[in-house]
Image 1 (cartoon, rainbow, N blue to C red):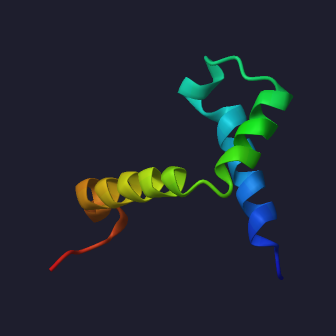
Image 2 (cartoon, rainbow, N blue to C red; image 1 turned 180 degrees about the vertical axis):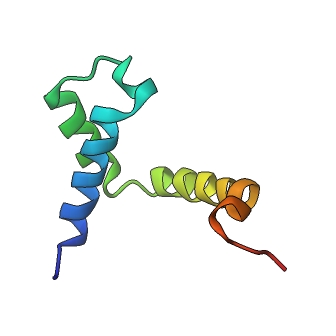
Amino acid sequence: MNIDPRQAFRAFMKYQLENGEGLTELGLNEEDMDNFILGVEDDSFFYDKLDDFLKEFIEDHGDEYGIEFN
């Protein structure tokens, strides 16, 4: 099964924006979500921050997911 990476990203972000507990408090409408998704899709700053978050989260909680660091 091949899926376009951009389509996968958009679907994931849409899901997160619609279902994220804190994000729902923002009251984003469809257009807001679409604009955000299209805006961050090629934004290197967004990916840098996401990378930082993932690295920190894995370092702090990786053992809970079976990740062992040497």
